[in-house]
Image 1 (tube, rainbow, N blue to C red):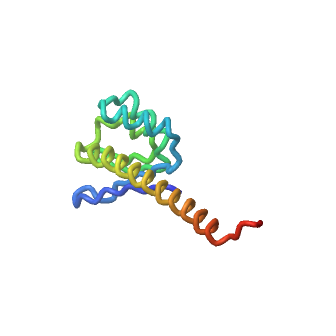
Image 2: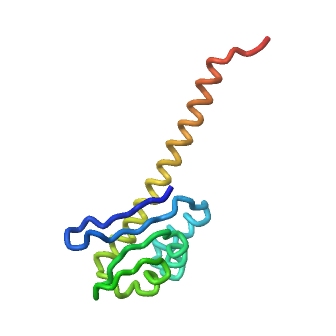
Image 3: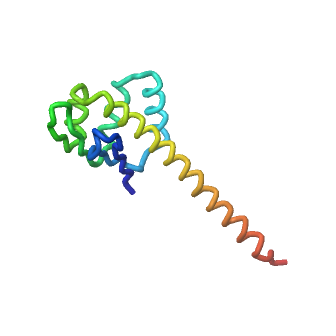
Length: 122
Protein backbone atom coordinates (compact mmCIF):
# COMPACT_ATOMS: atom_id res chain seq x y z
CA UNK A 1 0.00 0.00 0.00
CA UNK A 2 1.26 3.44 -0.89
CA UNK A 3 0.44 6.48 1.23
CA UNK A 4 -0.45 9.51 -0.90
CA UNK A 5 0.22 12.88 0.72
CA UNK A 6 -1.56 15.72 -1.09
CA UNK A 7 -1.08 19.43 -0.51
CA UNK A 8 -4.41 21.13 0.17
CA UNK A 9 -3.25 24.74 0.43
CA UNK A 10 -5.37 26.62 -2.15
CA UNK A 11 -2.39 28.15 -4.00
CA UNK A 12 -0.43 24.88 -3.94
CA UNK A 13 -2.99 22.19 -4.77
CA UNK A 14 -1.89 19.55 -7.24
CA UNK A 15 1.34 18.85 -5.38
CA UNK A 16 1.61 15.33 -3.98
CA UNK A 17 4.04 12.59 -3.05
CA UNK A 18 3.57 8.86 -2.60
CA UNK A 19 5.28 7.36 0.44
CA UNK A 20 6.07 3.69 0.92
CA UNK A 21 4.25 2.07 3.82
CA UNK A 22 7.09 -0.41 4.39
CA UNK A 23 9.39 0.94 7.09
CA UNK A 24 11.64 -1.02 9.42
CA UNK A 25 11.87 -0.17 13.09
CA UNK A 26 15.43 1.03 12.48
CA UNK A 27 14.32 3.34 9.66
CA UNK A 28 11.56 4.84 11.79
CA UNK A 29 13.95 5.43 14.67
CA UNK A 30 16.55 6.94 12.33
CA UNK A 31 13.90 9.18 10.71
CA UNK A 32 12.56 10.52 14.02
CA UNK A 33 15.99 11.09 15.58
CA UNK A 34 17.14 12.90 12.42
CA UNK A 35 13.93 14.92 12.11
CA UNK A 36 13.98 16.04 15.74
CA UNK A 37 17.63 17.08 15.38
CA UNK A 38 16.94 18.82 12.06
CA UNK A 39 19.60 16.62 10.47
CA UNK A 40 18.99 16.63 6.70
CA UNK A 41 22.01 14.35 6.19
CA UNK A 42 19.99 11.63 7.93
CA UNK A 43 16.41 12.36 6.87
CA UNK A 44 16.83 13.25 3.21
CA UNK A 45 18.41 9.93 2.09
CA UNK A 46 15.64 8.05 3.90
CA UNK A 47 13.01 10.25 2.28
CA UNK A 48 14.55 9.72 -1.16
CA UNK A 49 14.36 5.92 -0.69
CA UNK A 50 10.80 6.00 0.65
CA UNK A 51 9.18 8.32 -1.90
CA UNK A 52 7.71 6.11 -4.61
CA UNK A 53 5.96 8.87 -6.56
CA UNK A 54 6.45 12.63 -6.80
CA UNK A 55 4.45 15.43 -8.43
CA UNK A 56 5.72 18.70 -6.95
CA UNK A 57 6.25 22.12 -8.55
CA UNK A 58 9.28 24.22 -7.69
CA UNK A 59 9.01 27.98 -7.11
CA UNK A 60 9.88 28.60 -10.78
CA UNK A 61 7.06 26.28 -11.92
CA UNK A 62 9.28 23.33 -12.87
CA UNK A 63 7.49 20.04 -12.29
CA UNK A 64 9.52 17.46 -10.36
CA UNK A 65 8.43 13.85 -10.83
CA UNK A 66 11.16 11.81 -9.16
CA UNK A 67 12.47 11.59 -5.60
CA UNK A 68 16.15 12.13 -6.44
CA UNK A 69 15.43 15.42 -8.22
CA UNK A 70 13.10 16.55 -5.43
CA UNK A 71 15.80 15.99 -2.82
CA UNK A 72 18.47 17.63 -5.01
CA UNK A 73 16.25 20.69 -5.64
CA UNK A 74 14.72 20.97 -2.16
CA UNK A 75 16.09 24.50 -1.75
CA UNK A 76 14.04 25.53 -4.81
CA UNK A 77 10.72 24.58 -3.19
CA UNK A 78 8.26 27.09 -1.80
CA UNK A 79 8.87 27.09 1.97
CA UNK A 80 5.22 26.14 2.50
CA UNK A 81 5.77 22.98 0.46
CA UNK A 82 8.81 22.08 2.53
CA UNK A 83 6.73 22.39 5.70
CA UNK A 84 3.89 20.44 4.06
CA UNK A 85 6.27 17.68 2.99
CA UNK A 86 8.00 17.25 6.35
CA UNK A 87 4.73 17.49 8.29
CA UNK A 88 2.94 15.20 5.85
CA UNK A 89 5.58 12.49 6.11
CA UNK A 90 5.61 12.71 9.90
CA UNK A 91 1.79 12.50 10.05
CA UNK A 92 1.75 9.59 7.61
CA UNK A 93 4.25 7.72 9.78
CA UNK A 94 2.12 8.35 12.87
CA UNK A 95 -0.91 6.95 11.01
CA UNK A 96 1.15 3.99 9.84
CA UNK A 97 2.20 3.18 13.40
CA UNK A 98 -1.37 3.59 14.65
CA UNK A 99 -2.59 1.24 11.94
CA UNK A 100 0.02 -1.27 13.04
CA UNK A 101 -1.35 -1.06 16.58
CA UNK A 102 -4.90 -1.56 15.33
CA UNK A 103 -3.84 -4.62 13.33
CA UNK A 104 -2.07 -6.03 16.38
CA UNK A 105 -5.18 -5.57 18.48
CA UNK A 106 -7.35 -7.23 15.85
CA UNK A 107 -4.97 -10.16 15.66
CA UNK A 108 -4.70 -10.69 19.39
CA UNK A 109 -8.38 -10.00 20.07
CA UNK A 110 -9.16 -12.63 17.46
CA UNK A 111 -6.82 -15.09 19.15
CA UNK A 112 -8.42 -14.45 22.54
CA UNK A 113 -11.93 -14.90 21.11
CA UNK A 114 -10.94 -18.11 19.35
CA UNK A 115 -9.26 -19.41 22.49
CA UNK A 116 -12.32 -18.66 24.63
CA UNK A 117 -14.64 -20.48 22.22
CA UNK A 118 -12.43 -23.50 21.67
CA UNK A 119 -12.92 -26.20 24.29
CA UNK A 120 -9.79 -27.64 25.81
CA UNK A 121 -9.55 -31.41 25.27
CA UNK A 122 -9.46 -33.43 28.48
